Image 1 (cartoon, rainbow over the protein chains, first blue to last red):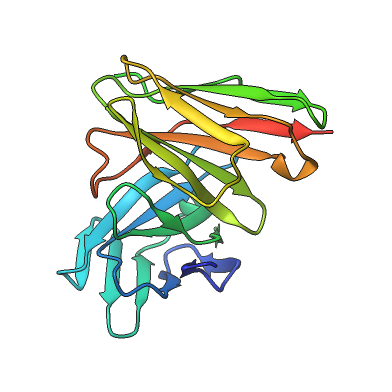
Image 2 (cartoon, rainbow over the protein chains, first blue to last red; image 1 turned 60 degrees about the vertical axis):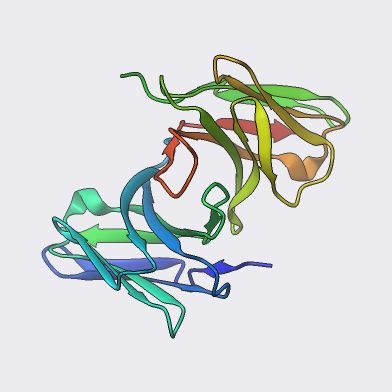
Length: 111
Length: 113
């Protein structure tokens, strides 16, 4: 049972434009959410996180939005750069030490 | 500070064999968790250890087991390998394993023939 879903397997964006990656979850008990970026042959690296008590968190070019009523999470990257091309995973937890990951969205930023 | 180290990087085994994967967490990190990544399935949680105790286990058969040593290093064992066990196995560490970001290793790519 996939509790965290990323329904877009891939996304292409022009360099300099905004990239929006989406994530939906089914478990209303999730209270902490994260985004990871993964390059081929490497492990995922942490990007940004958000607690359920917030609805927005920013870190440089990356902003995560949380809509608890819709059980929806999104990651905005502005402006997008070619180096952002990677697979992005969202993850959620309600236990703190067991994370549920989405299936990933492959982002391609076109120069 | 050295990152999370996983060995070996690649493994090829045949059905019915067993395999042991190793993970050395970042120094000072006491929580180690394991994930299986397969195409189309994302990362699936296997188990998490903290101070040598398994605190949480995912929905995997008993053929998958793990342990953690007093120096926080962890091993994962898969017995009686099946073709479907072919996957990238990722280890991640964190300081306390409580709502904090995970630091991942590069993974062990296991192929079962």
